[in-house]
Amino acid sequence: MRAALIQLSVTDDWAVNLPVTLGLVRQAVAAGAGFVLTPEATNLLSSDRAHQRAVLHPEASDPTLAALRAEAAQAGVWLLIGSLALKTDDADGRFANRCFLIGPDGSIAARYDKIHMFDVEVSETERYRESEGYRPGARAVLAATPFARLGLSVCYDLRFPYLYRALAHAGAEVLTVPAAFNDTTGAAHWEPLLRARAIENGAYVLAPAQCGSHAAHAGRPRRTHGHSLAVAPWGEVLADGGIEPGVSLVTLDLAEVARARARVPSLSHDRPFAGPTP
Image 1: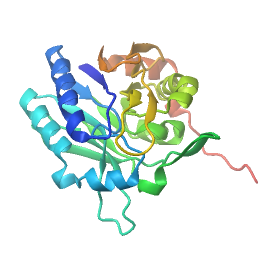
Image 2: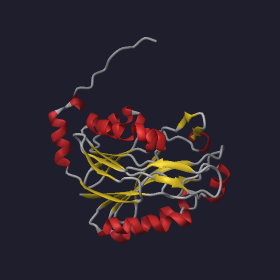
Image 3: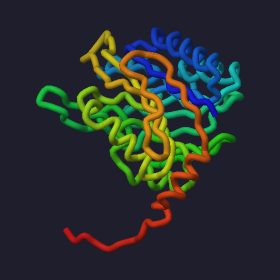
């Protein structure tokens, strides 16, 4: 299977972002991709909760989701929408950060709500509290396709290896990690963490990313790391998207998954253990 990682630099206006995303999806399809992946926050990226409340939609009426479903059906490809920010009916008003796997008929084959919330203080001047605006998911998702079994995750999930271990034990051969990774932490941790998840589990890791400085009508502009990565099951970096929007292509060969897992069969070596005692 030929896969394409789309790298975006979205604004906080979904109507501006959507034509750019559609253009890159079409570019990927024209290059022969049968599986196309977009990053986290494909519809928009904003740190302003009031702006989000004004412009976001629920899943049933989200225009980005509708357009990308139609595009997948038109092209006859599998499409992973890395995530969309969506309104929910939660009493506290928090949004969902939801990943979608779209089938080649335009149907929604799987949904995954980001489990781990990015609540960190990168520096004295850079603080994030994702959980204040977004409710965390509670269920890991494995999606079966004709070309591979996919383990779904989003961005900050990357730092929690037990999620990927569970996905691998459930049969995942490809781990997807769409992201809008912070530029400071990305420079230090993005590539080594992605390579570790691939090596630990003997799986492909596909990580389409946001990049650059994100224009905002309201709130503080964000900067993201870029460098969409495709990593082989043995840990080699197969593609690096750099720091500009674009498309990175890679060929998936599941024989490589089997080969890596046969060489180091650590998935069969997990053992229960006691302790430690606090």
